[in-house]
Length: 328
Image (cartoon, rainbow, N blue to C red; front, side, top):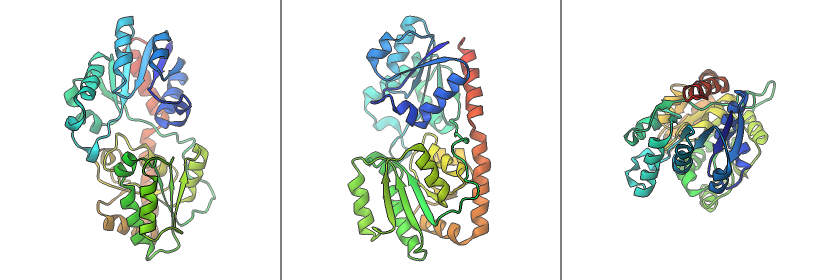
């Protein structure tokens, strides 16, 4: 079958870069379908297909309407990020209306976590289903025989939204407390530079960490894997996640993770991560992992066992069932 994979991204190369997209495209193709990636409304109108597979709820209304007009099924999926994981009531009314309409028109709506489903339950999606995302464990895996460096890592784009949502400035302050008693550690932050890069640099300077914190900018997938495989601890106390893929990728590479008790993070990770809310608690978590080898190894093992629940095979099989249920 011919599937139109639609997401309103600025550059089609992102279909191969963003893991959410890439993993689903690979899964759909491995199921034997012809997948055409489309990123503009004009191209959407020109594309003939048997089914529309749409990432993100906002722009999803357009392919959902087109699918109805053409008598084709549509599958809508995505994640929802709100400040402090709060209500959607503060969003613009037109945006909420478009999302509600998209979910009512789509043949099936796939939520990537129970947390997101509950957050959007009032939108009355047609045929809702929870299908967790997956981790590419062929790519993200521990390195065999490679010595780990005394290093803490975070992966996030340096935009104001992401820096705030991932609490990166708090993480830098927590590392500043930690490094006072563990001066041999470094903190590497990977992710493309955006409108918050100056804020991040200012916080690094304020904490006197110019020689201990490295901003690596945007890196390739292979470089990200190598960065994770060489480190010990992943630090990311997010305030809101739809799934938290970066945390799972870090655990898949054998890192111990420190994060926050955000509802989706707890849902996906359970007791396989170290939780901390305040800057002091985050610093304490770093110290315990650095000093207690038995505890560190236990958290690494818990992380690897947890990641196994979110395999690419599980996602592919779930998508296969969804496609069967819409007649594909």
